[in-house]
Image (tube, rainbow, N blue to C red):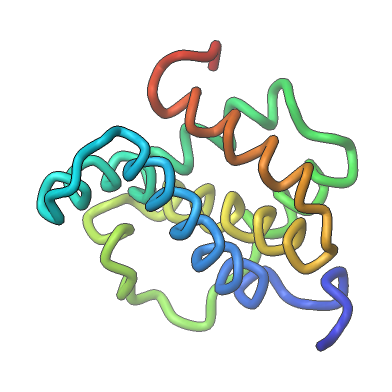
Length: 137
């Protein structure tokens, strides 16, 4: 496995998307619902580009280390290899929202690949609070 700081933003976001999905699914299961449709509906607000973008923008203002902020800026400005939006959770969002969402996922991928699980979980839990409106944006 290449070093996380040598991976491009798309590769980091690829990993971050998968990791985040697991945490979101666990989080919505904790609501007590057992119906797949209800679980899916509940998870959409977390995995949507809009929710992810809102979370990372709030974290950029207050909540990221200097190195994390640099990574997010690099990932946000990364030119994707394709202009098509194929990811289901990002369909219908504008380009800047997509870029912020990708930067969010890249940060999570980076933290996971670095083995910094404590910080990964801290960022994810804070993001959940922002998306749910329970924490200041």
